Image (cartoon, rainbow, N blue to C red; front, side):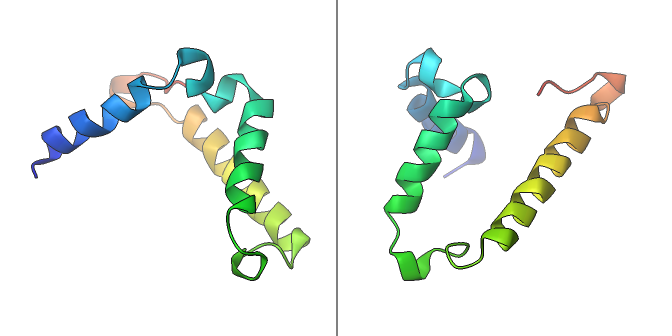
Amino acid sequence: MDRNKQREIASKGGQSVPSEKRSFSKDPELAAEAGRKGGQSVAPQARSFSQNRALAAQAGRKGGEARGARAERPGPEGVRRAS
């Protein structure tokens, strides 16, 4: 399947979600709830961070720092990226 067709199909999935639930960046509580649901759907022995909370916290900080660095970097032609 060509890349454009694949993107078109994928975007339909996102559009089927109501806008107030589409962006976790606007609702941290909704994001946390979704994360908990996802984590609960995996067997405890298969959860990578379930046995080591410090490792999970370290990974979360690293991800947050990477996201922050991406938001600070200018995009194409000096345009700032939206967060």
